[in-house]
Amino acid sequence: MTNTETVFVGLKIKRDTIDIAFAPNHCRGEDRFYTTIPAKMTTFAKVVAELQARHKSLYFVYEAGSCGYDFYHFLSEQEIACDVIAPAPKTRKTRHSIDRYDRDALELARLQRIGGLTPICVPRLEDEAMRDLVRCCEEARFSRSNARRQIKHFLKRSGIQHDRDLTWSYEQLHWLDNLQFAVPAQTIAFKEYLDMLAVAGKRLKRLEQHLEVIAKNWRMWPLVESYQALRGVHLLAAVTMAAELGDLRRFDTPRKLQNYAGLNPDKNDSQNITISGKTKNAILTKVLFEAAWAYSKPAGTTSMVTRLLTGLPRPVVEISRKAELRLCTRYRKLMSEGTSHELALAKIARELLRYAWSISQEITFH
Image (tube, rainbow, N blue to C red; front, side):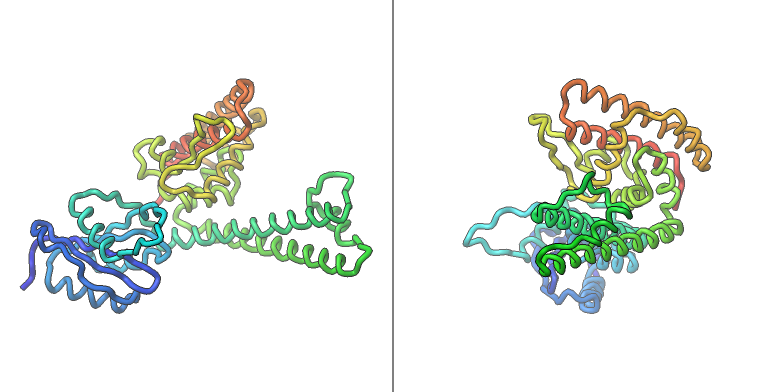
């Protein structure tokens, strides 16, 4: 016999297993742990079919994690309600503490029943794929930066200095390639460092080319193109913002977006910057800081004409111009007041999100 009341099903998904518990809508005495199954889609589909045969209405909930959103997409295709929530912060374990995943699954079902959970915005498959490509590009950038840092440290240990700071131009790379050392082992090690730099550079260039081609066919390309109207936001930064933040129209106010991004200067210590909020996204924070750096220079006079020639909508151009005038002035004011450079960048980056939100309200995409 099929039960007509809604049953809330909590899932605790781990790498190898899934713990399932359910909590009926009214019969709270029947809240119980159901079963533990292997973390395979075929097994999960069978359990869902069993629950559908017993209960007419199901409502699933689980925490986001390394498992991705495959279970959410499967349930959505079956027209079954499902929410994904942000993972709870991990507490420090004591020596005698034991993980109780069955209890966690039951707690998820109970909290979902009383409406005590806030679901996250689950990205579409193409949006998630674009985010993976963006993070791959960021890893390539880190590899190149790491190779450059190792070369600098090697030269410093060897007592070799260049007349100017290394800008990694073609002439300087040619100079580095012709360096010779007294001990053959040093020459071999240095050549390996140069090869690491060359491989990382080629990989990054290749990924950026793929990113540019794929982004133009992405549904969020109008938003990416408009983000580039902001000063300091290049193609990779614009794609990163769109992929990591998603559709900004889901935020009612820019303050909610700023709190979601979690970029907040520490009010108690001007020398520190705290990254708080729900995302703690290091890639997004880095991109916003790099864009905020561009506002440390005076505002340009021909930037609005340049943006108009690119074919961007006039409201977007006006927002970007307003952002340039305000943020450049605000940066100079903060520095004149004795604010540290890091704290000033944090404030500029936070306010830059407000103009990105305003731009998203002027763009239409599906």
